[in-house]
Amino acid sequence: MGRSVKKGPYVDAKLLRKVMRARDSGNREPIRTWRRECTIIPEFVGFYFEVHNGNKFLKVFVTEDMVGHKLGEFSPTRIFKGHSSRKTEEKK
Image (cartoon, rainbow, N blue to C red; front, side, top):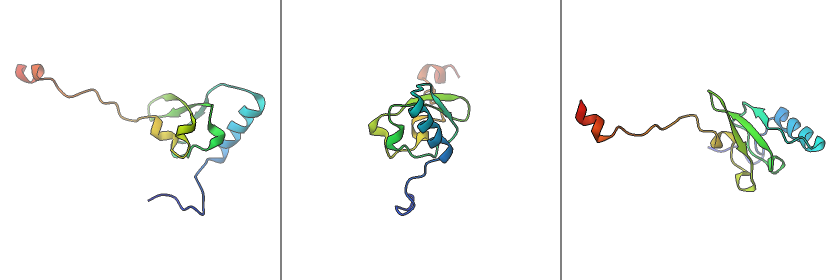
């Protein structure tokens, strides 16, 4: 179930302050965050974020198409290494 329209999108206040500070100073360094549940708002467009996936930080560049999604959607937590091939099954 989504968040109430009355409440608006969830945006971490500390992360928003960091974005506004970077915008005012013209700083283009990536903003490091653990807040995967934070909703991307139009103020985030054009910035790089380093989003933690539980193991390391993955670099995410925010574009206009991402507005309304969560930061965690662009930093996968699981790595698919592929199914076993027939060759390895025949050896067993």
